[in-house]
Figure: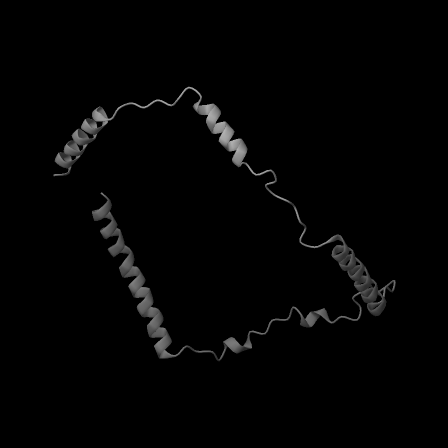
Length: 136
């Protein structure tokens, strides 16, 4: 059935193309197009405006330098200890996984995850079969 429809469609397109006259552009077509483009082209396409002005950037730099000096004066720059002598960084990187020991999922949550997993693994072959039938 598809081959018959394709042949009919091809014959129709061939007939329409034979009836359509060939049109050719005028001799000065390119010149006319270029003149229109030159007239319609904007003079200034993009004007750069910085997000932060020079004054704001200068103020941010001064504030950063002042912050560095403040941290240096508060934390100290002793010869042996360095800047971080007063910081207790051990507590920053200590992980506490004790909450996992007593954590349990409810039955509803477990059943929901199992149901969603089942639906996913049922849906993939179903969609593959559907696409195989419809595409090819």
